[in-house]
Amino acid sequence: MKLKLGLPKGSLQEATFGLFRKAGFEFRSVARSYHPTCDDPEIEATLLRAQEIPRYVEAGVLDAGITGYDNIMECESDVHEIAELHYSKATALPYRWVLAVPNDSSISSPKDLHGKRIATELVNVTKRYLAQHGVSAEVEFSWGATEVKVPNLVDAIVEGTETGSTLKAHGLKIVDTILVSTTRFIANKSAWQDEWKQQKMENISMLIEAALTADGLVGLKMNVAQADLKSVINILPALKNPTLSPLSDGDWVAVEIIVEEKAVRDLIPKLRRAGATGIVEYPLNKVIF
Image 1 (cartoon, rainbow, N blue to C red):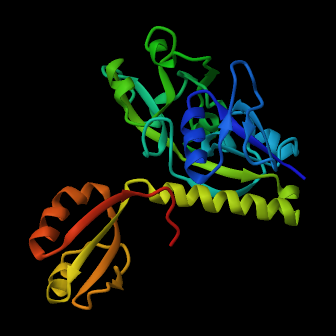
Image 2 (image 1 turned 45 degrees about the vertical axis):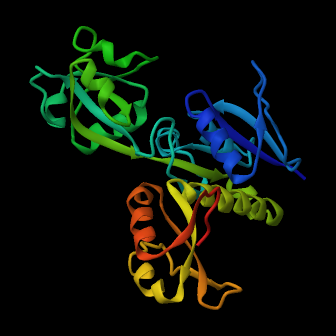
């Protein structure tokens, strides 16, 4: 039996492949191929535009897929959400769909859009947003380069951004955020009822989430004399209580913890001064609490 898995092609592809690699699944794709091979023979993967994945999962063409919440909402797909995955193509920030206008525009709220023209790739979500505000405006699909269409072609745009830097570079200001989107692992509802497929998807989800949890964390281990143990433990910002293991010399113990990587540069000197020796920092691929 195989699990038919849809993976996003394009800007999110490399980030997704990298995440799966940390989770223990190696995907390889050759140029122009839409069917990457996986070192897990139970997975049959297909590369698709992330925007298309929700409807193929809903239809049962795919058992599961990785896509954005924005795409699910745009397609209005009826799917089972397995997990929310906090990663994106550039940062760990959520992907925001924002209403943006030129810096000198008189538009300062959704109400000001009445009778205006808006360009976006997220047509259905934008139309629902306008309806919620009781605004009638023309919404047209944009095939890309949406930022350059204001003010000569349209009055406003609804565009996706992580940092807002591209919008700012084009002389645009954000009026409102209409949708906050993160990456989701979704399943076809019938496939989710299949015992084998559900367990396979749960296994994949567990390992992916463990890889995401490990991001930004490292392990530290060190040797500490019993006489210095209390002072060392007092400065440890461990996510859980540190692991203590006796050494052959009864006056010493081995201490092991998981900490945020950014804290290590300040922490190691403090540990050394508190009496820790043999301090080793090591990377983490997966963390499951």
